[in-house]
Amino acid sequence: MNRKIHPAISPYRRFSRSEWAKLREDTPLTLSSDELNRLKGLNEPVSLEEVEDIYLPLSRLINLHYAASQQLFRATNEFLGLSQRKVPYVIGMAGSVSVGKSTTARILRALLSRWPDHRHVDLVPTDGFLLPNEEMERRGIMNRKGFPESYDLPAMLAFMAGVKAGRSNVTAPTYSHLVYNVQPDKVLTIDRPDILIVEGLNVLQTSPSAAQPMPYVSDFFDFSIYIDASEEDLHEWYVERFLRLRETAFRDPQSYFHRYAELSDGEAREVASSIWETINLVNLRKNILPTRQRANLILRKGRDHATESVQLRGA
Image 1 (cartoon, rainbow, N blue to C red):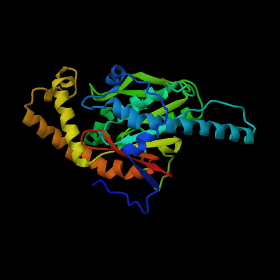
Image 2: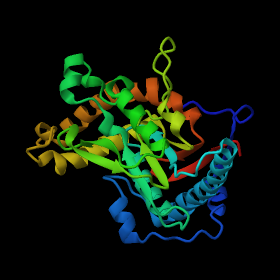
Image 3: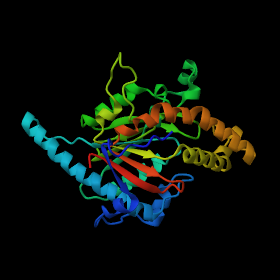
Image 4: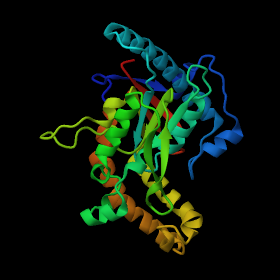
């Protein structure tokens, strides 16, 4: 279903992998193999070559955007006669389940924090803003976890507003993938970073109701990234990750999915495919993929997880 963007009417300029890699120029590689291995997610192979070809040019682009935004912010404050205050540069990152958003966000955070202009880089996954399982069960939407209606949107908007207002010690809830629920006793504290990366399935979503318009989470973004891949590859990556989890996290008795730990390979593939097709694929087609065209930059992955092309809006 991944609809192709017609080049004649697209607001994007498309770069092949080799074309994009050249835009790194002299940006140094500041990430070691050991560090990269610690940043990678389960079943998400990322090589140092990928970092050099894709992530270093991206970090250079964001560094340039960050510098320009700071100049504009100072100019606006001067015009309004306001005192200078620190406001984070916010990056939104969206894409399907299993596409590798978390790994991309962690690598980008590490690289951006090595630039002298913005050492303080924080990362907030939006999973923490999911409604508690008890509330989802009350509403009858446990089978729609990850859909827009499964998030506490007012809390997410309040968090983003606090961050963009330059407030100190703004807190965000956290989520445990082990118990498959939010953790009310654990929070992330965001204290006026230089850059904040906000990563999640639906962060580029627009207002859920035209009759009752609200701000969008993306209204608070300075730059946005969508990570793209074919439905077939996403399906296979999801199944492969499920099989890996069956051998690892699912074996923990505290795991919400512990009941799947003893499934055979065939049974596990069948269960994973069913979850993908009835929940994740539906969410992708209905809610996530339609937001792709709102991103400033699109990273398109191939079957081997490596980025094949980059599309940059307004280039």
